[in-house]
Every structure is written in C-alpha cells, then in structure tokens.
Length: 83
Image 1 (cartoon, one colour):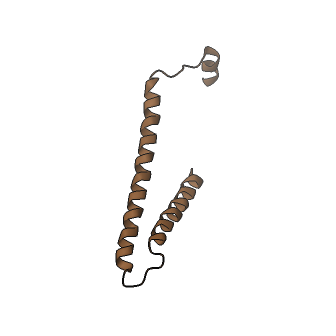
Image 2 (cartoon, rainbow, N blue to C red):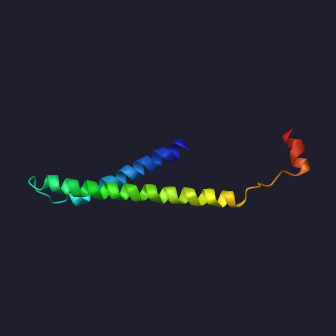
Image 3 (spheres, rainbow, N blue to C red):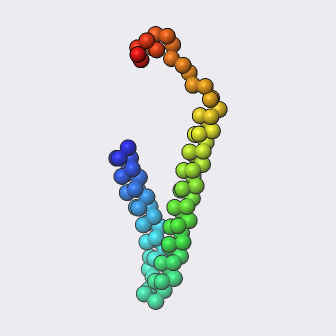
C-alpha cells in the first residue's frame, strides 16, 4: 500500500507539473502571472476531475457490495478450520 501511495503521488505531481509547465512554455516575464494563473486553473480542474472519478469508482464499488448484503458463509469444514 505504501508503494502504491508513493507511486501515485509521484505520478500525480509529474502530471500536474507537466500541465502547469505546458501553459508557461515560451512566456515572457511580463505575461508570466497571467499564464501561471491559467496553468493553475488547469491543474486544479484536472485534480478535481481525478478526485471526482475516484469518488465515482468508490461509490460504484460500494453499490456493488451492497447489492449482495449477505456474504457467503463458510461451509462447515471451513468453519471448523477457522476455530
């Protein structure tokens, strides 16, 4: 889990950094402020969409679990092994 978290963080920073730097490519210092604001807007929108997609996937997973409210009970042989 820790490796997946670290890999996801590194990938997210790389993607959002690329989006931000792409908006500033070839900018002169006089227009840097406006391009930075535009780039940050794009970064925030992208991050927000990623969060919404994750929330949607989580909601779908929970709905799938709640569709079967009675999980399978172990057979008697499995129950005796659990004791």
